[in-house]
Length: 447
Figure 1 (cartoon, rainbow, N blue to C red):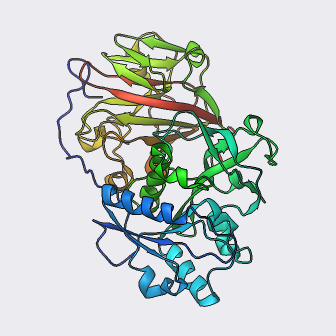
Figure 2 (figure 1 turned 135 degrees about the vertical axis):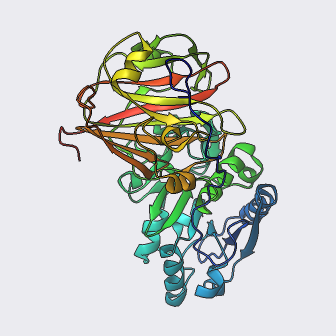
Figure 3 (figure 1 turned 90 degrees about the vertical axis):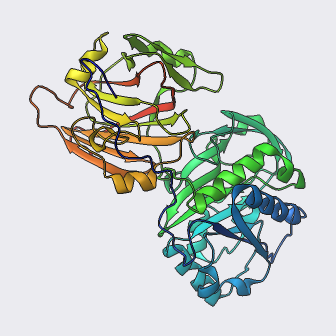
């Protein structure tokens, strides 16, 4: 919230750090990612495997990472795996690694390695519990290949941010032995009413991610047929999953349950929101709210909240990240945006500002942990996820799953115990987009 006049003038300070790669788990430079595609099968062998390998290599050429491919399980040694940022299990089946190779791969993951599972990767290593947890779920059965509707649940993750809210495609739709929702972060699920043969009682995850035993894991059940690997939407989905696994981009991959939408991308959900002050937000066809003009605020007028976890996805438009906005919490109902400034707190979005007024800060009160913030922050133009958790007078901020701020209100003139939430439209030159604003109310003492 850079301001003039009554709004405090902020002095441009810290430079935007575009690097978003986490600390590398391997010994080579993190500047260039390296991926190993593993295609050994001890059961059914998909004829799409060569197409998949070619697609990943092409994605690497355009995406700036190197790709090696092998069917030789002998590649799974401690020394060799150290060369790679992620290992892609591409429609592997059956028991493909011996005990020593399994131990080497477990160590690789525990030291921060990445895993990508594609389609029949879930039909692999049924007697290896570590792998089952890493993949997220094991294959059980599938009906005939047919069209179905994929429901995108996470619009911010790089594997799904470019997809529409519902994605109609033809594939071989796996049923799984267990539902990974309580253990992994679900990115997309199947609408079982859109096809025949689904056996997961209407809750049918089909793509997910998770932080697992020190490493990163992404799995997609898509990718049975050769045609998948020339489909731009699927290639974008796959590329985003690989980018997450190698640490090139950040995402919140903790399980997410118990949230309800405050804004779900529909015009109907806008009825509970009111514009305070000048400027506005525009709702686009893909369910994104984008700011224009200001200094104003769109606030949720239907109710206030006391103890809660608020999540929302946001993206800057400027190539330098110099767009200005914020999320306000803990303010009384008012059509005057200054009420939020004077009585609430703003979690800032503007990575080019000074520490106490930059992305992740409680604006003007407490800076974010800038080292953690810089590692967690995605580059301009890519989606980020905030979690703002309020319990009593304590306010915690997570950026893409990483806690970057912990603030306790001690000002008797302000209180976080009961108040409204809002998103800021800052000014004519600021374009900020928001998606999927959701909330989970917590017990009064927090959790």
